[in-house]
Image (cartoon, rainbow, N blue to C red; front, side, top):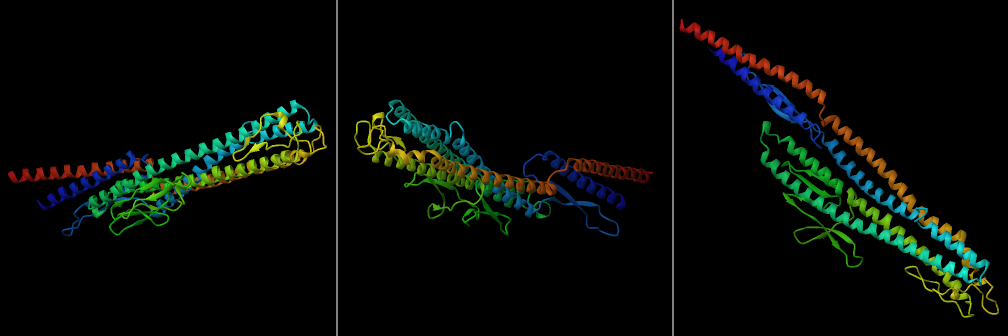
Amino acid sequence: MGAVSDLFSIGRSALNAYSTALATTSHNVANAATPGFSRQRVDFATQTPTGVLGNGVQAAQVRRINDTYLQSRLTDDGAAASRHGTARDLLIRADKMLSDPLSGLAAPLQTFNAAVQGLMADPASLSARRVVLAEAQGMADRFAQLDAGFAQIDREIDGRMASTVSVANGLIDDIAKLNQRIAQSTGGLNGLPPGDLLDQRDEAVRQLAEQIGVTTLVQDSGAVSVFLEDGQALVLDGQARHLNLVATTATGRYRLTLDAPGGAVPVGRPAGGAMAGLFDARAQAVDAPRAAMAGLASEIAGAFNAAQAAGQNLDGNPGTPLFSDPPLRLAIDDPRQLAPAGPPPAGVADNSAWDSAARYSGAALSARAAEVVGQLGLSAQQADARASAASSLAEQALTARESVSGVNLDEEAANLLRYQQSYQAAAQMIATADTVFQTLLSAVRR
């Protein structure tokens, strides 16, 4: 009877083990497209023998195939790609706005210079004077239009920052909850935590890093602590701490703070994720070009206001400022008030007072405008190169991670067939044991 019992026991152990293997393989196939999923593998081991003969097989553990180094690399490279991609998109948009041949900066400067040169050729002409005022107004309008465009990008950055903080806080809560669930669920096969929960936590950390760069530390308890790159804790000792955006009274812009037991504390400028990209974009796609354009507007106003001050208008009176600044606006609306003529006894046909300004409005102004536009274009070009490189590294990191942890459907299909055959063989063992047992009962009854 002992041999028959052993046969039943061994067959039953094989059925259980290969049933676990089939379920695990099916789980892999089902999650082949799940982001962050790590394939799982059943490790088989012989059961402790009770004598000379073996005692069957057991599924010793369901192991999660994961490389922590590759996962960390994927998280870090993803944060960098998110930062540079976010900055690149906004910089390219700002560059196109400023450099557009029709709606950008260059066109109104060129038409204004043409009008100035026309007036220099015929200083007494009311028609030429009207053209100068019209083109000066058009140039001032274009400066205002472009500044409004940069202001719109600035407001969009504020909105994106708020959205980024909201998404980040949700992920911070998710990580803290997953830490608790993992601690509560640990104790399965061989005391290992459930692989699916570990995958979900790794994926949440990866997504959080895409929002705002973070570092992590695995505690002895298995919980993951999450920190900002300046060392401030987001998830620590089971507690989740939220980020906040607070408007500054000086500029009206937001600054980043973090909840803390003693009250909100300021957070340094992030070095990774979309939030860092938004700070980069604000500095390079908004602040820098707006400052450059303000400087250019002041130069234009200064050159022509000085020319006006040195001349006399058609009525023989001293000239008044052509522009007010900042912002750049047309300060006169009467063409007779233009004062290209030098001081008496120069006549109205004289243009000597505007000689310096007229030279400035040509090649010099064109060069300065090209410098303003070119600096933003260079920043956009550099941002595009950084984003492309970071995206390539992130793709390589994902490929490396998937080569270890990803699901290979061909391999899983082969495993399904192999485990199915093993399961059927184990079932045959049970059937054989039952036949032997029935034969034994028949012999005993005789």
